Image (cartoon, rainbow, N blue to C red):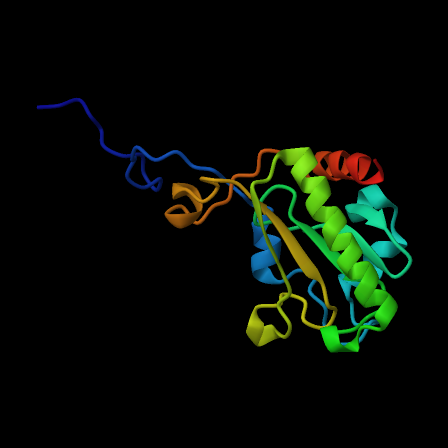
Length: 181
């Protein structure tokens, strides 16, 4: 006979797993703050963010025609995006000045992330169109995702969870300081 009363009522069976709660991801999963349409006035966050101060908008740097900001739902710490101020959906819609500054900001993002975090590699690219994986397809943005050896481990592969060791505001400040050099 044992004195073990069994698992608590309604709490499930205890196991050896720890839990890492990421409730902030639920906003992304549910599509909160996602634009309601394709126009600039349809709730596009990339049109709204530049109206805020840099800290609140997670803006790392502003240029003449593009800006760099942290991804609110990053794949890795330091996940930046380079975005034109103008509301365009496709790379072919950019004018020559936007193409040049987008390229320059991408280079600057790589340099900044290497210096700030010792990134060993990068994923750089755009998802053009919803079927290509663009979360906000109506406003072009280029991702710059720093990578390190071993950054994909059991957490995202098995646990469906990303562990980010730094708060977004702290990351934004670090990168903004280095960007300005």
